[in-house]
Image (tube, rainbow over all chains, first blue to last red; front, side, top):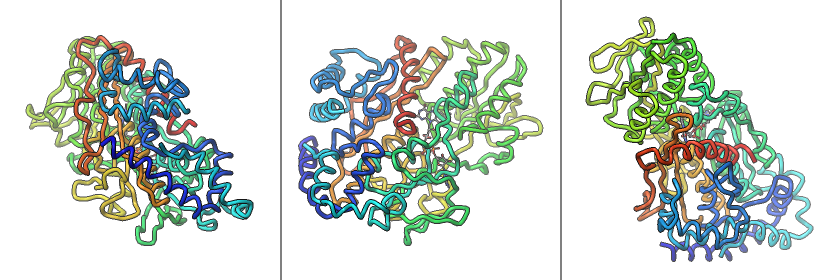
Length: 117
Length: 428
Ligand SMILES: Cc1cc2nc3c(=O)[nH]c(=O)nc-3n(C[C@H](O)[C@H](O)[C@H](O)COP(=O)(O)OP(=O)(O)OC[C@H]3O[C@@H](n4cnc5c(N)ncnc54)[C@H](O)[C@@H]3O)c2cc1C
């Protein structure tokens, strides 16, 4: 499963480049929209998982009250926490139940996504 | 590794060159002028507003129009806190200005028709909008006929459902405030499947909290057609700890299913017995929102079948259904799930526009319930696609431990969750 995911992610690069050639004109308009209306978000396995984490961790992972900020933390720190929750090495409330839902590769991908926010 | 949207845009800008400037003029107003793809979204609630925002986030060149019959959305999540007197309705009402700032074209109006062949939607005022892809997230509607004597009119006057937030929430709150000490609050709970499985039980918890503090001789009776309910051991433990035996629950195997109501005598009938109440909250059985039926998107179950991951309707191509209206199981009909679904749907739509494979779908759901203001419980699950089907990941998810050791912390997290998800959808 995780191998498939990585393959799917890397397949996207040439497809995007091709689309960029074909849609150059409208995409230029998109640049102005992105500038006016805030940054765009990458579309990847990491960002899809990450976007669903935002339900609690806030848009772009900026945190809320006692729910920690993830945006901009080092990738290793986020991944380390997730792996600790997954193995029950660290006790939380809901995070032990959630971290067990992801493969180690997915944890790396989502950690990288938040590290880059 | 994937190419970030930022990199993607830079690349396309370099390729498009200066000639593209001509494309700028028309782009805001009408996608068809520039050839931009058009997405129309019906509903500005949990599913719809998320879909509108995330299509725009994943590809700012897409022309996105979001249509809602109301100019703001009052959330069902935390509406039980309004009923229990812990929050004001304004605190759970969100306007669409942040979406407009992102470039979403927000239209106020009720959609009355969808033509999936012509790819247009029509509004009550006669105006119409063309789309390349349509997202439908209208929430729920009620099977009023399932209970004899119940109707929309009865709901709006004497026996509110308060299962869509707004006027209904305020009506139930008012009735509760006017009830005398020693009165009986009756809830007729709905059969499966329905919006927010733990919702009815959170509601009676927060009603109990209000009564305990203000009208301590009152009683709560829950009449339920089901033989059990979400997070039942946790709710029961919390009820005993916080409210003694104020809440009585009668399940389906003991004749709990309400079949008849009489607003004149303020009685309900369940299992052949008549019960009298001072405040009666009737939550009827549910189905997908009206427009989904009108447009032929729902099957005999009353809900909308969809394809895994993309949320494209199996009944009408080009139309995607997310949120409570879709058959999204094993995800529950929750705001969190609607938000998660809409993000996967938005990615699938943008990928389709670019003839790409969408990222692997992934979902999470966490539902907090407040048993008391400082006593929270949760249920969580992570979902993936396996052999073409959405399944919950084995070994993950589950409910809070019994014993209440995390209850105070989880009550705090419930509030932080609400702030986060509403900011994610309507706030920035
Ligand atoms: C009491 C209660 C408590 C809840 N608590 C929680 C909770 O704690 N956590 C959680 O995750 N979920 C909770 N939920 C569930 C949550 O409210 C729903 O699952 C969620 O709202 C579903 O989102 P949706 O987009 O499908 O519908 P909605 O959010 O209801 O949005 C539908 C929107 O579509 C608009 N609309 C409908 N038809 C049309 C039309 N024809 N034309 C134009 N606009 C239209 C409506 O005006 C509305 O704004 C709760 C529900 C209830 C009732």
